[in-house]
Each structure stands twice: as C-alpha cells, then as structure tokens.
Image (cartoon, rainbow, N blue to C red; front, top):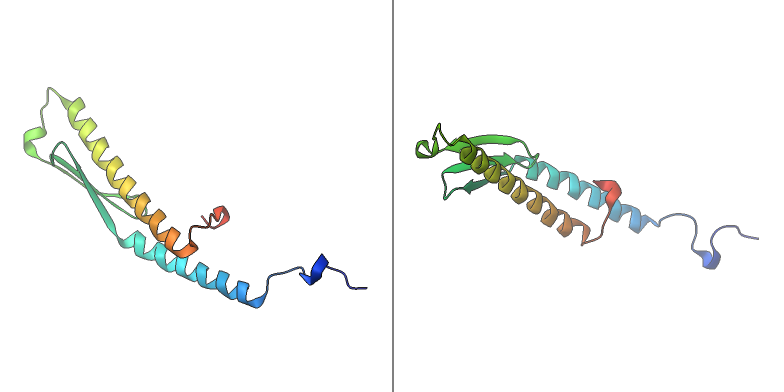
Length: 113
C-alpha cells in the first residue's frame, strides 16, 4: 500500500513549482537591488523643505530654503522636515509594494519579507 496524500498528490512540490519559486526568488532579489539604488524625493511647505531617501529608507539629503529658517519658529521648520521625510519614505514603500506585486502576482507571501 502506498503512503502519502490521498489522491496521489504526493508530499512535495513538483519541479515546475520549484522552478517557479526559484525564479520568483531571483526576481525579488533583483528588484530589491534595483529599489535600493533608487531615490525618492518629497517636498513640504510648497517646496521650502525637500527630503530624499533611498529604497532602504535611508535619508540621503535634506534641503531647506533659507527663507523658512526662522529662529523664532523652529517648530514649523521641524514639522516641514518631518512631513517631507515621511512623504519620501511613503513613496519608497509604495514603489516597493508595487514592484513586489508585479513579481508575486498579488500573492501575499509574508515569509519572504
């Protein structure tokens, strides 16, 4: 008597599924490299503050227009910097999610992240 799953399903993945999983893994690694090298820039305060991040969510650059530097209102400048950084990070995150969706076909694969 044969052991295994009913209906002859076997206990593992077939070669086609294994190759597909390997290709998906290679595509994901390539995509991660590409995204890590991309930069995302966002502005706040009508362009008074600009923040640039990369795909690793590392802040690369902050630009501040001289006219928004008011020693009596540092809170506004802090808020503008935070807003610009958060928006740039959001752009990077959305780009990563969109690329991942292309590779996985929308499948949720939590163990791969």
